[in-house]
Image (cartoon, rainbow over all chains, first blue to last red; front, top):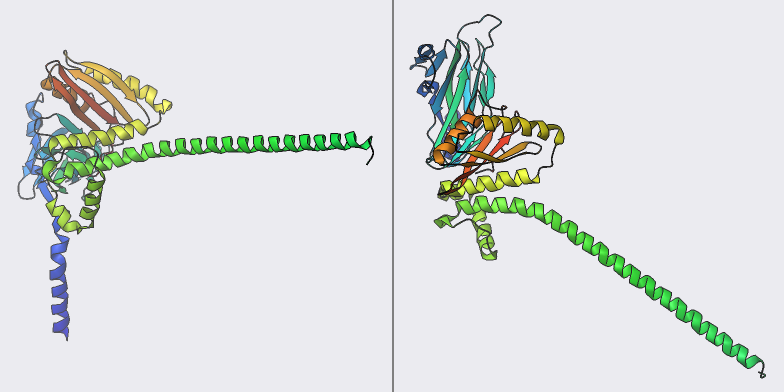
Length: 162
Length: 226
């Protein structure tokens, strides 16, 4: 009897799985794929970023900005979800936060779409996440996220639709 | 009946006839007045309907633009005729998953047209909120002028209730990109934290005509679902 039920449950899950995939499928890119803005920035800013290639996280020991390109398959209005945390407690006067906005343009950069900055207050023992507003991503265009990281902030991954 | 009664009876008949005529005439005038009022009312109804239709047609146009952008064979953007409508209804009857799978990619130009039509429609329908728009206009004009490259000029800045529209002219594409980077995207010069959409409208030997929509603080540009 139990065996029949187990087989029944497995068969149901097997039937459900393909429907759970499909158009809702999303991608995830680690924050470590991000490049820092170096234009006009002093060298010490580059030195204050650490990339952890095992977890895909980026850790900042200063106030800095990173840009993460996100590859897409289709044109459409898209948003990205980002998550981060504080690796260690900070003095109270330092605000624990990261803020990001989504940006998109076509190949020739004749349209540029950007969302407002979305803020997450990072914490030591939790990994909060936030989703940017949507931007218009043309086919074969550029989609990405720009983030400002405060001192001692760790950013993990960016999740977004294909 | 004697001779003296005859004229009196005649006069009575004439008076009755005159009264009947006057009554009939006043009734006719009243009926005409009612008819005129009805016609006026009907005219007002039609005007009201056309105003409603105007808003509805804008929304419909946007939907059609979105659909047109997805049309198989890359049919150019435009209004569909009845045949197209019928085929669109048939298409919508298909299972959603197969429609999704067969959905052709929208070209950059089509997407730009769809987004611009939709955002403009929203901006155009907005009422002017003077409490916000006056200050926003001033602030935005200062910011865009500060980030304007030498060969560029601001044609118009107009803020309404949640959106501002900035019309600009640039010497070439590089200047347009430089303007967007410095005046709209730059963290230092960002006038407030709102979403934005900038697009080149026209390119010719005389330069580049562009438009930028900027959403109010804390808000985003209302893109259509694509």
